[in-house]
Image (cartoon, rainbow, N blue to C red; front, side, top):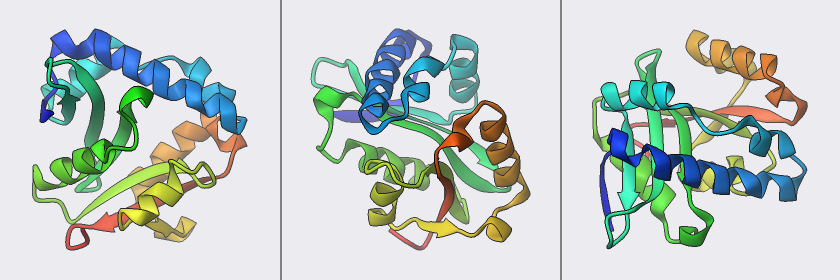
Length: 168
């Protein structure tokens, strides 16, 4: 298995991975995630164009996981990490996060996630992320949370999290 930059040819596989991973949210009472649908190709192209998209490929060179990021307030904001359920529980998400963190000089990794979903905030805590109080969120994180509220994701408890670059 290999981590490498995502390419436009990977987009159909990324859609499939995102759809399969999103379906798991139905089991925890958050069907809206499955209903949002995957990122569009234009959005994916933006991440790829900024060199902030990585895929984990299997031995047949097929993507089985991916990470999308952007720079927010000088930090690396993890916009999306998805592992196909058929490849879950192998540490692929953690390895993608560590790879992205090593790809640049960022003071921290930041993200927003569901507080109570086992593969969200509890998982990120195990990877060294800490929850931020509302007044600790950067302006960019606040703007992201406001956008997420506008599309209805605040119907379930959410949290902003941070992992300093010195934390591994």
